[in-house]
Length: 158
Image 1: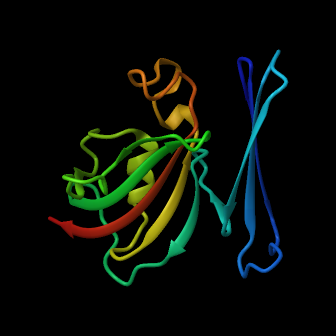
Image 2 (image 1 turned 60 degrees about the horizontal axis):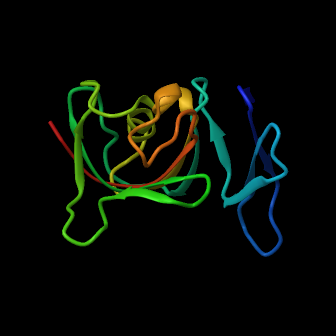
């Protein structure tokens, strides 16, 4: 996928050496630059029709949240560079709660939560169209950024 001067390639392959699951390799390069960033994620990559990609780390045994319910998660958000921009696990922070269907968070974050089961852990790979798009978010998330979220669904309430 190419947006402006940024090129993003996400591939999924079979079993990685010494790893039971497959792996995804993300490569990002910027036109006119000699640098290329590569990140490797271990697990089978699922791609939703929207473009959201995720790796199921642990399948939960609880309920799946639905629109109108409040989901409580622990999360860590990072850029493809590995720079963490936010985490509910930071000292003094508490798990994050979001009412699904209320447009309280970016589309990719809500979509990623909406098919998890309580107790599940998932790595989301959110393309910029489902994140902050061309505007970015403050100084910590540049425009057109692909976002990585490490999530754990803790609880669902009506």
